Length: 298
Image (cartoon, rainbow, N blue to C red; front, side, top):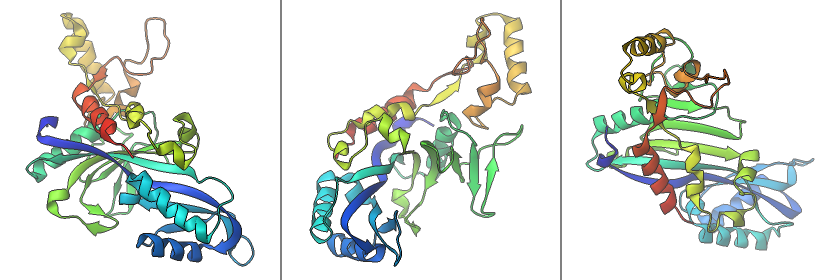
């Protein structure tokens, strides 16, 4: 499925901000104040809950316009600080950045095909590659021979507590509400928290202003298998060995790029390579995502 049939855009799916207030309060009062300011009911959590369910440190989650417009978000927090004076500058505790591939004519089969391409080519140094099946409410792990990706299911890499975690899925809903069909798209997203934020210099909310999101392009890496004939370079014995090796380990995009972790990882000095030599960059996807991230400004 060619990327040329799709418009590619990037956004912040959600942003978690931590505020510290000078006087204690209950989370529902902070939530109500935010509702009056923004017109939306936002998720608010007390991080230092004390007797009486009060605290001074709160985690706030922003979506949509507020997450993607630094000026509006800052204005909302400024208004909140008038009611609950802040003890320090708001900090970032987690952010999820997404890239969407929306088909130019709204083709559902093509969008599913792009979802599968993204799932089968995403290369990430995460663990527990799996798909969540809403019918069974269970994860289907992709660590056995014969396991195959299903573009109708959410593909996940990494754990909830990890600094980095990825998802690729066919997006048809938002906030548990069905989207119009012309907004259905293939989405790939990465969540950064903890040390991941420090690594990219995202510590305080103010760090998001003028942040160059294309710095995150390295988190959206896509690979594809090198054609066996190209890798063999005319050596028919090597060609046969390559095909047998891949089949033996079930190294195939149909199971995900992690299936190549067991082939071609040793160099001639018997050291472990970061990537299998059976893989090469999918430049078309890499450039599409990098361009979308470059256009994302707050």
